[in-house]
Amino acid sequence: MGRAMPSAGTLRHPLEPAPRPADGAVVADPTFRRLLGDAAWRRLDANVRARFAVKPGVGDVFAFAGEMAVVRRSRYGWLLAQICRLIGTPVVPQRGRDVPTVVRLFT
Image (cartoon, rainbow, N blue to C red; front, side):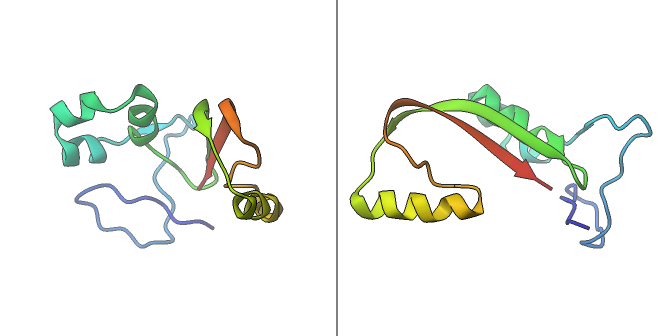
């Protein structure tokens, strides 16, 4: 069982799953919007707002696709990227411009 992200103002045991509607719909979570304020929230990229506007439930997977404008690396960086492939490659194993990427968040 994973950890649920608690809402602002709610005390919750860390291993207690987040409440989910019966239909399994994603639950809105205004925590980050409240913390930042409306003006700062609107300045965030739409993809960032989409990620932090929902409360992930236990077992949810969020995937965000995009591209990195420029990816550079040294020889050491290349070696690190190859090693990180063993754990799902959080480090991009290639270099270039407009490199496609997908970030997956598991809860």
